[in-house]
Amino acid sequence: MMAWMVKQVNRKNKGFTLIEMVIVVAIIAILIALAVPQVLRQINRSKIEADKANAKNIATAIQQWVSEGGTFSSSVTTWTTITETNPVTDGISKYLGSGLPKTKLKNDDFYYKYDATSEVVYIGAKDSGGNIKELYPKPDPSYK
Image 1: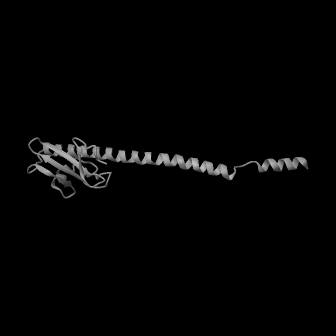
Image 2: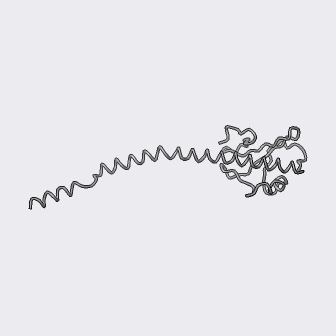
Image 3: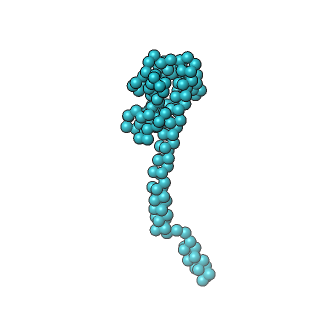
């Protein structure tokens, strides 16, 4: 009889108390609160880097198009949207194998400017504030 009672007492002492469970949940919540902002920051950085890479690909495609005889009528001094109906897009589409990319940061179009005197192509995109920032050849560090 005594052995049975000792066994019952020991069995009741096995397991977790409510306080222990609350502490574990609190620790997990703190770890999540620390990790989530870091993950979101990294995701945003990767979108920015992808936009820079896509801008460079578009600029390279425009340069190839120009080297094969494609021309701009004159300097394009304002940001012009690169869309599916743009004449530049028709010329560069064969150089962009997967089609015209959208920005990863805002899922928007890329923009270009062209300086005919120096023959430099500038590629930009809208940032989260809606302002067009240069991504190629000199990326604007305020693009976020």
